[in-house]
Length: 246
Image (cartoon, rainbow, N blue to C red; front, side):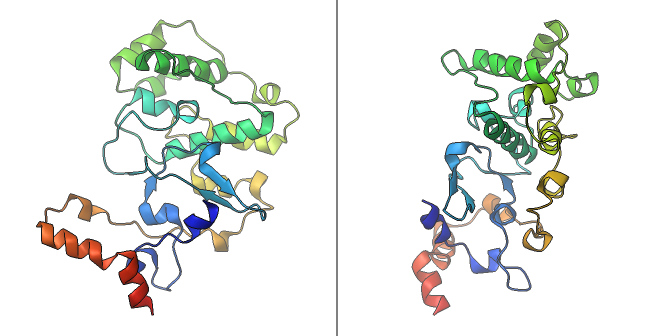
C-alpha cells in the first residue's frame, strides 16, 4: 500500500504550483482526513509516513456528517457540533495517536457495543475524565442542546495533570500533546504551529513543508450535462495523463 500511494495520479494542473513543484496532498484536497488512526498510516524502512484511506475526507467549507472518524480518535466537536467542524479534527486525532505512541495503549478506548448516541456519551465521558469539564466559553459553542444539557448535568471534573498521566515522557512532547488535545477547536494548535513546536525542532524543515494556495473545489457543485462530465473525467483519466506526459 505504501508503494501504491506513491503512484496515485492527480490532475497535473491541480497539483503543481506556479513553480512546477508538487503540492502536499493535504493542500491538494484542502480537506480534513477525518479518519486518522494508526491502521491508516503506512511507514517504510526509512521511517517515511503516508496517510492511507481518504474515504472520509471532506472539503472544509461544506457541512459535514457526524458519522466520521474512528471513535477512539474522534474529536469532541464531531460529537457535539454534529455538522460544523474543520480540519482541526485531524490535529485531535494526531494527538490521540501521539499519546498512544507514548504509552503503548489507546487514550480514549470508547465502545461501539451500545447505541450510537450512548457510544458518543461514553466517548465524551472518557475525554472529560482527562481534560475536565469544558469552559463556559466552549459550552456556548456547542450546537447540540442535548449535549449541553448532559454536560451541565455532570458533577464538575478537574483536568488531570498531563505530566502525571504521561510519566517519563519528554516535557516538550507533553506540552505539544496538551496543545493538540485541546477541547476547544478554536484554541487547538494548528498543523503549522505544531510543526514549529520545539519538540519537533530537530525534525522540522520549513523548506519541505509548503502551504499552497486555497484549492478550488467549486466544480463539485456544478451542474453539467452527462457528456460534459464524461469529457472532464476522460481528461484526467490515468491513461490520458500518461499519454500527455510522453
